[in-house]
Image 1 (cartoon, rainbow, N blue to C red):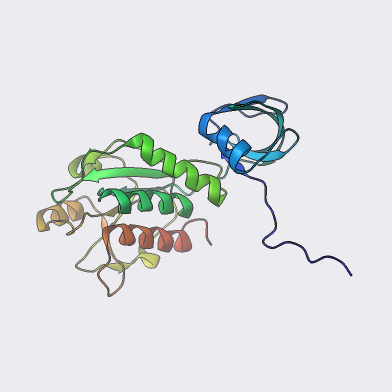
Image 2 (image 1 turned 135 degrees about the vertical axis):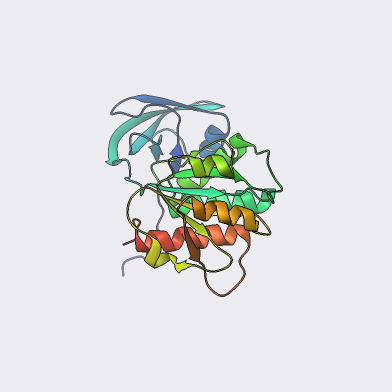
Length: 243
């Protein structure tokens, strides 16, 4: 009688590396990633991993040498090209640390191409730690199979965003708006979501004057981070890469 296979099936670990990837190239892994592979996963010479760098797709690699605090990997073959992301930007008013980090993680998993913090009148957090936020995005990309990382821009004022080349602008309008599934169209798009307490009436008027389309997100009041993720999911289903 054949043995029952293990479940879930064992998959190769995925790791982001900030280095070029090409056939037969050597990749040096140090510090926390090396500790994770060697000491947490207990990988050793001859074991395989999957690597991506945000530009060259995903590569299968083998551990060629294992030292106390570093590993040398050798790229073997590309297993998938870099993904083609929908040109979607999430422009969001930063919230407190825990929900903000959750937002970055889940927005990365859902497939946004760009993350744009926006400072509004009611924004309570204006100073961010970009290194920490990118580390969260990298970990999310490693887990969900992304081969590109979202670009994280520096915070900008709402008026600067409205004056920029933002493509088709959809904003979460607390007073109600068109269903996002009807308002979403393929092409460069920015989804704008507000802070805790929402946009002020003056801000809403300026947003509408910038030819933005107000969208509704159902009959319930959503937290700022929940609204952002709900909007991303609806867009991906209607005009993104979930179709």
